[in-house]
Amino acid sequence: MVHYLVYISVAANALPEDELKAIMHKSVTNNQRDQLSGMLLYCGGKFMQVLEGQKENVMQTFERIMMDHRHKRIAVILEGQVEQRNFAGWNMGFKSMNTDELETLSGYRDIQDFFSETTITDSSHPALVFLKLFYQKNNSDLISRM
Image 1 (cartoon, helix red, strand yellow):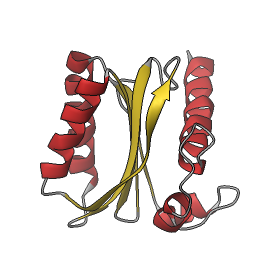
Image 2: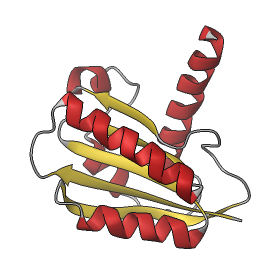
Image 3: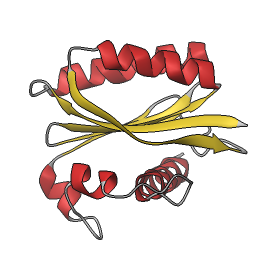
């Protein structure tokens, strides 16, 4: 079984693109070491991330995130076990979007409102469905460019 955790948070301060890229590169290195996969979205000063792997590694990583001064109002919105990884091959997928880009997505609503409004505790949670669809689209785009 693979443990997963999805959280949302608010950036303590606006993050420039170079700092976001540094976060992504550090995350890839750490996640390779810890055998984690997942992805991170950043939009309008808000983060949403999914981590998956061995429970101990997921929880240690999440504890580091909770201590990171760049985050505030961190909330776990989903946590559980799955048979296999949803984000296999992505040590840390990353996408920084602006609000205009996000609003073009079907069914757009504010990330924090949409993903925290339900307490479903399985893989049908809107946050996990959204992240998996994003992964499938971007993974297939990447493969088609190769």
